[in-house]
Structure formats: structure tokens, C-alpha cells
Image (cartoon, rainbow, N blue to C red; front, top):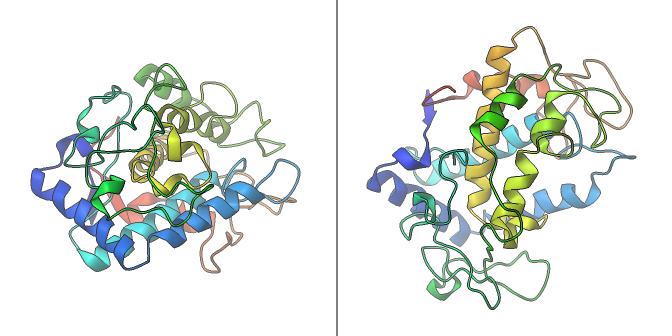
Length: 276
């Protein structure tokens, strides 16, 4: 079974293989469709209409499928590559190891946010943004400038204690339920806060342009995996057909072969190197 590891424990060889697979996927034109897909759902998901990838119970299974499909594409290039995760409760500074030149590269420059170091710097010629909200075709970051601190381990633990999985009205205004707490529209705010902390490209619907997206969402997925293990008696909600949202057995767009039920047990596909 594939094992997803903390980026901080990757060997130099594992870092190099992961970066090389990302660059090759980009070169083959198979990376940018993920950016387009994510942005389409960001733009279309809303509290009062159909919602699938965000502001909805299927936020977690949708992104699990999204990550799994992306990981499998990377494995077509190198079968030994798995998605690493970024534990932002530990690696929480602008000089943490993931921002090194051997993995994600560092912060954006002051003038325009352009990332100028590492393998995804525009000057290297290997990471032009072809799906962008404006004419700037370079990766941007503003680490820690738009929100003060990343979530803490205590905050993660507080969210892991929340039951049930989700609750009506099944959108960003739900005041109870694990999903809305981890997504970040209510309460502690884990997922959304990290996007804002990284800033730049990560602050847009086209956030998969930044490879940090995949490491961040891999950690969100790990938190969900832990919640599922701790609360085995609390399943996905809603269990039955509900207007505008994806129920447990419903197919999730844009795919025609994947339901939340298919995604609920991560151990069917991979495991994480550690538990909380």
C-alpha cells in the first residue's frame, strides 16, 4: 500500500523525485487541467445552489478524489512517488524546510509576489502559469503577510473532537459539524486560513498552480482520516438525497464514477506514515 509521508521526513532523493514528477506532468500538459477544474468549482459552488467541492459535505471526499487522481498521474511518471503532506502545526515559519530550494521554493518578492527561488520559479522556465486570473504568468506567494499564524495542534485537536460529520443547512453557514470547522467557514478555521497564510496564487480559485496546494490538502485529508478513525460510529452526512448537495451514495461531479462512499475509507488506497 502506498504511504504518504510528512514532507519534513522526505529524503533528498524523494524530494527530487516528487519535484521531477510535478515538472514533467506540467511539461506534458496534464497539470493545468487540475487547476482549471478546481477553479470551475470554486466559481460555481455557492451556499444557495448546487455545491460539490466547497461549502458542502462533499468538500472532503471531493478533494480526496482530486488528490488521488493527481497522485496517480504523478505515478504514471514515477510509480514510487506519493503525495507528501505539510504539517503546518509544526512547520509554521517562512523558513521551514518545505520552502527550501529543493522542494517548493520560498516566498514571493515584495514588488509583485513572484516566487524567485526553487524549481517553480518563473525564471527557471519550467513553471509558467497558463491558467491565471490575470496577465501575470508566474507563481506568487506572500507567506504570513495576510494572516498572522497558521493553525496550531491544539486547534486541530479541537476540530477532531467535533461531531457529527456535517449538519444542515449543509453550506458555509452550518454552525455544527466537523466538515465546516475543518473547511474553515465556521469556528476554528483550518483549511481556509492556510490558503490565506500562503497567499498569492494560493489565495485564488486557481490555487493548485502552487504545489503547496497539494501538500496542504494532503494534510487536510490526513486530519479527516484521523477523524474517521476516532469517530467510526459517525458516518458521512447527508446519508440520503438532499437538494443541492451530494449525499453518501451520489456521484460527485465532474466524475461519473466516484461517490463519497467510495472515498470514505482512505485505507482502500493509501495510508499515512503516522497518526496524530
